[in-house]
Length: 317
Image 1 (spheres, helix red, strand yellow):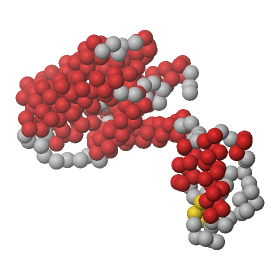
Image 2: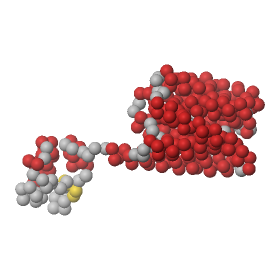
Image 3: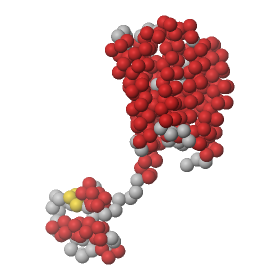
């Protein structure tokens, strides 16, 4: 486990890159920051800091794309309505569910979304209310649990045929609403802690430098190619985080004792040609050196060995 200083340095670096991407394509701060930050922090600590900084980021993006708001307001209104119950449900999940399960769920859900977006999946979507309400509710749950909503929003708006200004305006409008409401709900649930404040202070300089730099550089690059590169990198980061989670989970599991060894006795067996039956090798230590449960397990092995006419190391036959 790295020290706090190392974790904050890594967090500042990935936040700077994520802010650069957000300034270039209009989204991506949380979808790039969260998978890396979850290697060091839990959602309960990380989410409040990300939500607050995203309020300011999305207000800025909405301001510079304000000309496209009238064209997309009717399209995003059903999504805004559906956000409210979803955010409440997601915030309760963050506050009540074990952080390990929330972290696993975050990695598992966002990976296919990022892959679909990176692949450039297209399918025309026209009915705003039929799709918007359930989509908004699901998006609210997703955002309040993971603070990530850019990939599904980008997939939806791309399939609705929005132009660049309308796309960014609609994206910013939804994200301003969801980040503001989520911050309020987090506050009432008491999720803002001192560690979240420290992370927020780390995000501020990264955002102030990264967003203007990204907006400047994207003028000299192909936006679609840059977006796919960033999303592919994000998918790799999420996959790495998921593998790391399972690796840490395996290391945290205690060794089996008693009943656990009995399960292993029946689960990991060996076949003996003399009888065609399968048993596990009898234990080599005497029952007096084991716990009572282990002694019972050892006795069961010995009795099965005798029934198979197998020479047992304890009794010689």
